[in-house]
Image 1 (cartoon, rainbow, N blue to C red):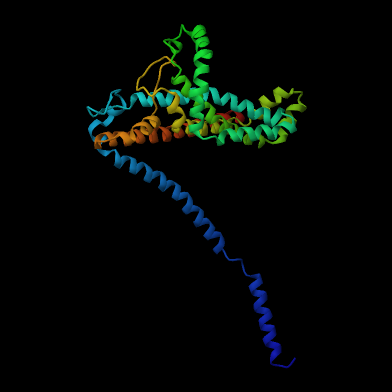
Image 2: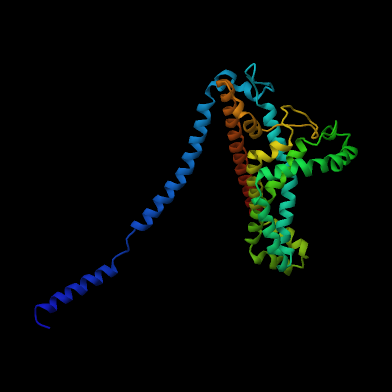
Length: 330
């Protein structure tokens, strides 16, 4: 090595050492941050654009009927008089019936699969539940027409009328296609999603919770109820809200079994109608601009009910969190 190459090699080594000791580039982190931010904003923009298109498509009906569209029951395309109240009633009642049936069954199934079921039977049951979620809604609707409704009309509905006929909810003639049948078919459709989400939530409960309960002498049921279900109640509530979102927008299956009659009746044996069903049934028949824009406004109302339900759910979750924190401090 001569006198000229020595300093050059030393300079290169010094430069390499400085490069190795330099702080890493933040370009990758920043790029990833901005990319994910754009994706999140894309979802928000999509929701805003959807609401805007529904509003623009229903502007004529909104100007003509204003708030009365939500408070009147008349649906007469010939006279161009439209009111969404029966459809709102049918949507809310059928969804509540579905939740009353599906939520207890789903949480109980998830608790069994997570805490009680033998290992050899867990995966087959999980696979069957996931297969139920994959069945197209039109297939469930056909099953509802030809299997479920005749069975309900011959056995459970007469029993309910005999036991609870003194209430206004189980009176009148039994036709089969009814609000209760619509709620039951929706419950079947939302049961897999609530069960799957609830199962994952229960699996995420730390084993320390269970071990602490067993150490205090709790039975298996007490440990599940106190240490697991109580710990996961906020997540289970979120699973129920996911099921509600699916129930509010369900269309084909409920259209085939609910009866499609725009009326408000206390009896669950009477036919009903939902917001999604009237859009599916009458959109191709809308021959006038006012009729078409009234259906767009039906979609806008359904969009608003879905957003309102999610906002109320967030408020309830926040209230539950505040209550739990206050009790912990006390």
